[in-house]
Image (cartoon, rainbow, N blue to C red; front, side):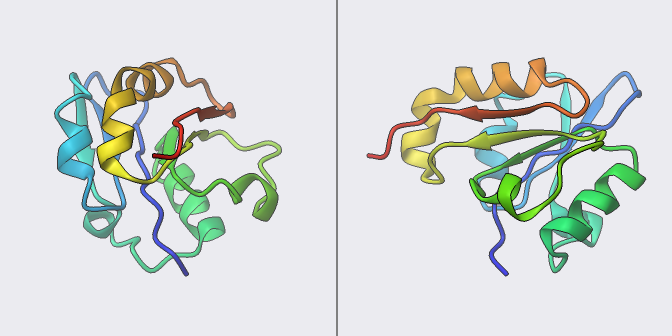
Length: 123
């Protein structure tokens, strides 16, 4: 199993919480003002498959997943999901950070069950 980056935002606490599944957690964390960021490892989820990860996150009240796994929508049934999914178009942080405003806007604008891809050109 690959470990794509993932961000989760808890609902409904006033301070949102996120979980990010890669070393880029700290890099993106600084741009997610007003959000609390946790890694999937901190949640004990680093070995979960995508389906189990989605179920665990929804069960624990998380509402946004940020991932670079472009195949997630094809691998998992997203119908009736409560969690929003935001997909980064490029997993390379040096490139993605040039589009951080779009990433933050997508995370902040996510609604329950939504699926959006943040277009980030390769290289």
